[in-house]
Amino acid sequence: MLHCVKLVGDERRAHLANGDQATMTELQTQTSAPVAQTADSPELETSAAKALFSGSILARQLFPFPSIAEEEREVLAMVLESVDRFMSDHEERFADWDQSGEQPAEFIEGLRELGLFGLIIPEVYGGIGLSNAAYARAIEEIAGHDTSTALTVGAHSSIGMKGLLLFGNEVQKKTYLPRLASGEMIAAFCLTETGSGSDAASIRTRADKNPDGSWTLNGEKIWITNGGIADFYTVFARTEGESGKISAFIVERDWDGVATGAKEDKMGIRASSTTTVSFSDVRVPAGCLLGEEGKGFKVAMAILNNGRTGLGGGAVGGMKRCIELATEQSQERKQFGRSISEYGLIKEKIAQMTIDCFAAESVVWMVASYIDAGSEDCSTEAAISKVFSSEAMGRAAYEAQQIAAGTGYMRELPYERIVRDSRILTIFEGTSEILRLYIALAGLKDAGQHLESIRSAVDDIFNSPIKGFGILGGYAGRKLTQLTTLGRDRIVDAVCEELAPEALIYENYALRFARASEYLLRRHGRNIIEKQFALKRTADIIIDMFVGLCVLSRASELRAGSDPSAPHAIEIARVFSQQAKRRMKQNLRRIQRNEDEEAKSLAGYIGELKKYPWDVV
Image (cartoon, rainbow, N blue to C red; front, top):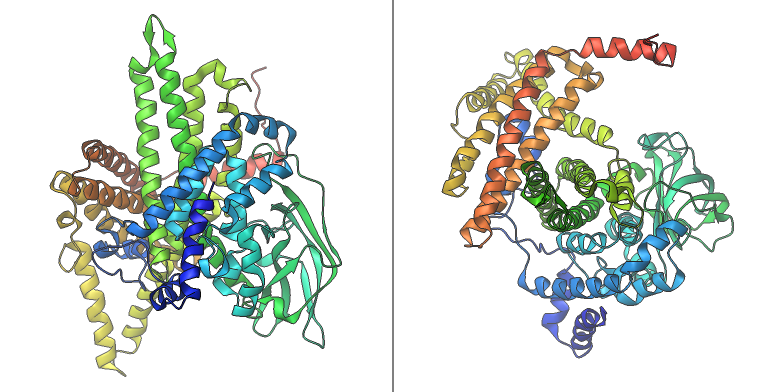
């Protein structure tokens, strides 16, 4: 079990009790010290993904590929070994729990004893204190065995109590984190309501402030993961104060007026607990306001952005399991006197699953390293990692089941459960559609602000010539950058020699994409927010570009370290880059030449009829 890992924390606390000043310093700085190490400190205030909208590739934020500190590597190895042993002991029961729709109490207790509810909680509060990167790898290990278990642990750590870690004051942390680390309290994230899934700003749950500073909470949340087993809820409610319209609160299950509904009967992840959570005149103490009053939307978005590495890690774990199942099945199954693994179409499937898994793992790890290093703006990168990894997992589940053919459709094998479980990944914690819009608009907003500053400079050129000409000079430099490589980071100098042609692909398409972004802004202006077809293409280009750069960085690092698998990582980088090039080329072309209006007209026609109108008779 993980008792061996807990001893690491106990040993440090023993040193602390004996006055070990070095250990005291380590514990005090643990939560803020970056774990992922790179040769150069990243420009933490700048988003590498958003910079691509201006044609800039921030090589220092992408190369070399981040690695884990040796001390944490040893702790993580013990965590993974313990998780694998524990989950393997229950392997044959996961299908039964999927059928019954419940994880037994003794299994949850086993998770507590293993320390899995304290993975990301700092040691000073009784947790293991993993970095975001190491935590994502731990969730990956759990998900490789069972998605429902990964969700139970992940919903607790990634979002359920993440707000307390990010925004809680010291009193709140001392009160709750030790109990959350031990699993005495399990956490849940209460945001979604009927009619306000992706539109978090439209929630109706209310918290009215009382004269004594406490709050009275009323409302209902739906589809809450861990809802039925949680004791600690992070709840978002409308407060309508001068400082904002939404606030975040800590709420305990035992308080009067808190109730949970029946367990939802779901398509997948059936063994995990999903229920409604309702609040009827619940008195919330003033000290349980999480963060600032009226800043709840900021709290919610920070939690979701910060927690997406856990979901991405789970997707990677699922993909690795699919690859294992697919390769084993393809080698054992024979058709026409040969193992189907020898056939080209099966090889194509397994190769593509591997490419997608390597790419997803690379972008999840890169984003986790940004978070661990204290990046001020990596929400766009986090959204990219969620979209790519969740969709890649869906493809892997489909292909693994396809390779298994008819047997993969039967419940006695894990394929159909994996397919059902994977379906939720593109829906919860931000649908792929909403996140694509966010990715595109976040980058275009920065580019649009730059263009707005140009217009202001032109208007002000005679009143403030030094300032005006300075801005215009910057614009001229930016335009020169978009037309040439002058003044730009050259990633061709950062990658290994074998991947120089692939590096040139991204350098070229960064320039082309910057021009396309400016075209969209000049043509549509503020109306760009309504051009969702164009925004989707914009997001897809950025996803391909950023993920591809992460792949190049990782493959180059493996080559530099003389890893025996490096030649195949180089193959992955080459194939992914060529595939991305074809997709980016098409998406750029379709920004100006497309059939968008015809598609919208057709959708409107079908919407009016509310049915398919044609028949052959």
